[in-house]
Amino acid sequence: DCLRATRAHRGCPGREKMRIVCLGDSLTSGYSHGEDKYPYGSILQKLLDKECGKGKHEVITCGNNGETAVSMAKRYAVTTEIAERRRLPPKLFIIMAGTNDLLAYPQIEEDKIVGALAAMVDAAAVELAVAVVCTVPRMPAPEDRSPEYALTKRRYRLNELIVEKFGEDRVVDTSSLDAFEDDGLHLTKRGYAELAKLVYPVCRAAMKRCRPSKKTTAPAPAPTPKKEAAP
Image (tube, rainbow, N blue to C red; front, side, top):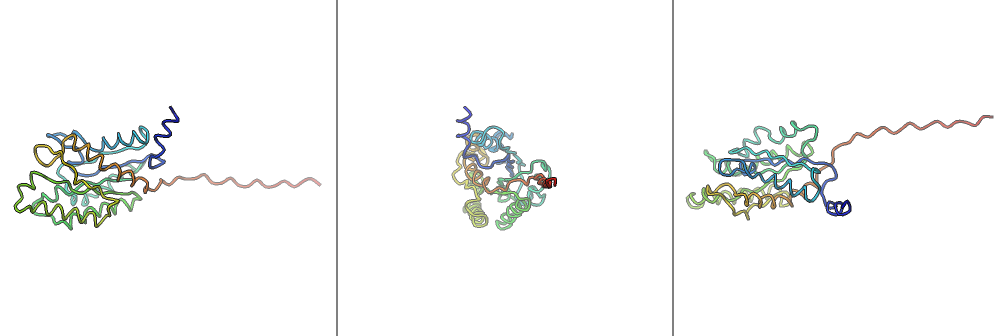
């Protein structure tokens, strides 16, 4: 059994225990029918447990319903999460925000949304952590109501800017998500499971880029003086 477990966990990214924070809005909290039921971070935890062994890494969900990328950056969301968990600071952030920014009134421009996302990515880098960013999923109901597909066009533009800014290897493409609740905005249980599967390979690759924690090494013992032979 031990041999099989070793083989199964050989490809696990990261040798030391790692904390991963899923940071975002109601799509991060797993909002569905008035409750935070299906956070994709819980499914991500199961995927990591299966590959790396239970408890090897820890996934924390920090999703605030209705929050915008701009408000997250203003309240220093990344820095706050790290400060609150100093004993084992997060090494990886998965940031999913922008939906509420696009729906906000007055309108928040796409450049400002990307700037807020970049501020959070930079804050993670200052703390020697890595951040990946999710594109904004489609919003069937609001987009259908938007005249001349204006909201859809803005979402396309925002997602293009996200890829341009952070690079494809640090972006989770959510365009394939298609399982939405009746509100045409939030995901179903299946939709959140699909989201976790989209996040997982990008998360796994990012974990390999995370720097190990600094470990204090014991000072080398002083050399023992040689004894001269008696005359």
